[in-house]
Image (tube, rainbow, N blue to C red; front, side, top):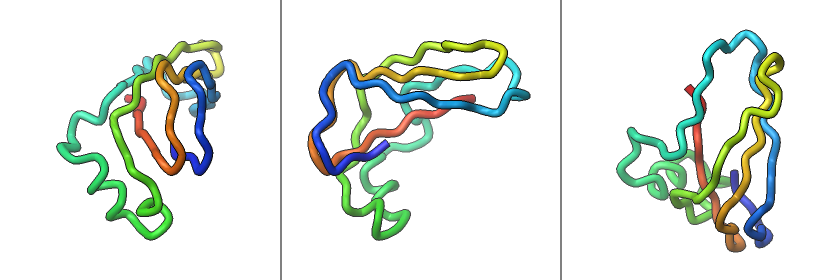
Amino acid sequence: MATKNKLAAGTTTTVDLPDDMANTAFIRKLETRADLNAFMQSRGPREAEYTWNDGDFTATKTDDAKNIWTITLNKGLDTNTGTAFQFK
């Protein structure tokens, strides 16, 4: 998730995963990336426009049958920043 605008703490986004992804777990931090910023910026010019960091957010599964999650930013994101999370 990346933004050109400041996002306040409490901002939410909805993630709708495929219904057949059984036993989905939310992974808050990317465990395999020692340097998230360098990794994300190396992915291309669009990603290089942002400074990437480990975000502070929580995830709640809001619809178990449809595998829909709501991600809440506990700490906002500044302009031109991004963060990453994953589902497993």
